[in-house]
Image 1: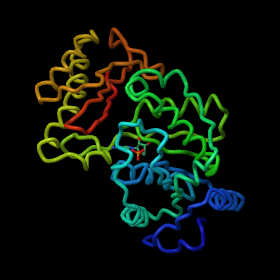
Image 2: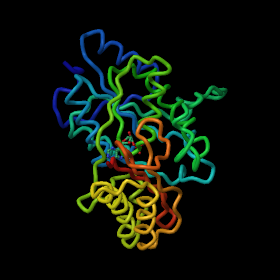
Image 3: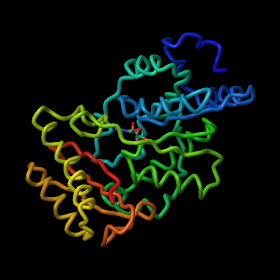
Length: 292
Ligand code: AMP
């Protein structure tokens, strides 16, 4: 199975830029018996993205990776203009994994003049990232829905790294009856614990060191919970201390939430997710860990 042009595993993926063409290609592949996995990304691919691709390739006959830096999910003061873009490098990495198809549309292809419809995000989008980045999830759910419409895949792969996004997308898919299975894959970290992120390329050496406090704070939360500390305030305080001790002072949030509703908890009584969003220099990083 798979598509005929892709006979060798190291060939570059076929790049499709038009919505019509990717839709037709995917529909034809499905008609001839292939299952389709889609991995939505903004490019600047690293091992975290590639882990999603590998999971899709293990579960589906054909994997489509979308590469699109979605302008509608960036706020006016955010890093849209400087967001790293290197499609050639991305294609080489994907070719080595045997990816068949890359959908890399232009802004105009996804948002032609006159485009004015957006999806209202679910309740889970209100706090955390939704509060710090107004409009972010409106852009996310809109582009994910559009991508799933033009790439009618059987399964779509997302990372736990963007925990709230994974919850919001799952909710949207369920609420809007989309015929796609959402698969959430574990966060891939550097050996020292830093969660892989395209934005890590913004960090200089000192900031890279400082950024480690983010995963350390999550680990501290996990350790406290494992040692029997149930009081969420105590755990959140400890997480803040770890960040502040490393000189991370611009903290958007330190949160301990119930995994589905994303409501803050008072006690770590069941499975809870600890999340951090903080600035290291000018770079805003997010990370999370399941605890309890
Ligand atoms: P992005 O290109 O940042 O929009 O990410 C595309 C997808 O890759 C999203 O589903 C992310 O959650 C996922 N992702 C990003 N970083 C990681 C990571 N370190 N581990 C696992 N998945 C990741």
